[in-house]
Amino acid sequence: MAYIIRRIILFVVTMAIVSFITFAVFQILPGDPIRTMLGTEADEVQVETLRKELGLDQPLYVQYFEWAKGLVTGDLGESIRFSMPVKELLMDRLPVTISLAAITLLIVIIVAIPLGIFVAKRQNKMSDVVFSSITQVGMAIPSFWLGMLLILYLGMNFSFFSISGYVPWTESITGALGAILLPALTIAIPQIAVKFRYVRNAILEQLRLDYVRTIRSKGITEKFVMYKHVLRNSMIPILTIFGLITAEVVAGTIIVEQVFALPGIGQLLITSIGYRDFPLVQGIVMYITFVVVFINFFVDILYSVLDPRIRLN
Image (cartoon, rainbow, N blue to C red; front, side, top):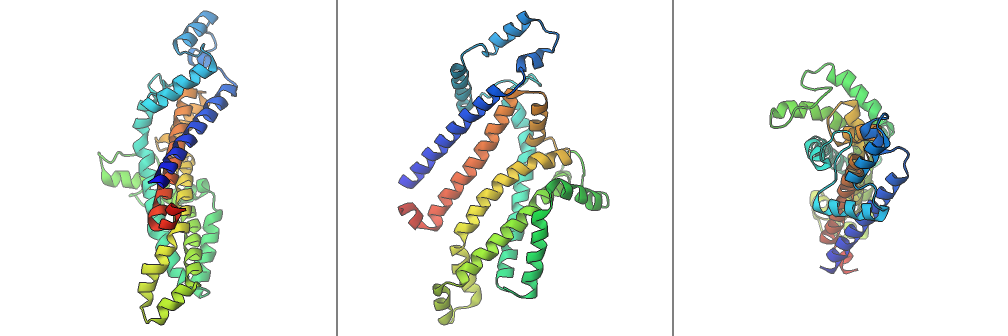
């Protein structure tokens, strides 16, 4: 319990620090959001009136605490560009990004882990060399270029795939899957290459240890040794890279949503930056931060479940 409490405190402190940095950075960026909202021909009276209505005439520390209080209560302010609450805009775009990230992670897990196990059992054989070479290429491919290739060779030749736009899951499961699958593959392929190598190396490291040799000497089957002992003891480094990959997947959606014209959080972020919509940008940054920090918090808790020594230490 003490371990979990420490993780929770660390989670809260991290979010507080990031919120302060995010607020401070947007205060020093060039551009006046009020003039962006009213236009260049607005007079000073209109500018000052709106500034007072939005509370931007208050001292910075007052503005920060009001904004931070809103983060806790779910009030993220109002978008300058869309004249809507930031929370509503995020909730409207969230299903697209969550669908994309979830399917991407699912593809990474169901491909990278079995492939890493398969190759680890065949170290230095032809299959090991071939898959290791292929993943080297996969790690080097930029996601936007890979997206273009998938559009060209899959999207253009198979009607199942949609190369632009999004169909809600409530309207058509097949349509939603067709719209999400190519973007998910675009993000997943480089991540599969990374996770595959980590899984392979983690398993190989366990296979070299004395306990594996002892278990084998008792006549226990290789399958039992691999899945009961080796894979479980390899999960700590595998979970570590899983947490990092989750953060990269969330970041990767920003670029890929532009390539495939998906109306998700990433596309909304690019639009809000272009219009100097600081409240919206701040809200999206905090959302991304929350997801990344929460995933790492969740991974830390899983550490303690898989290896009680971590919790005791």
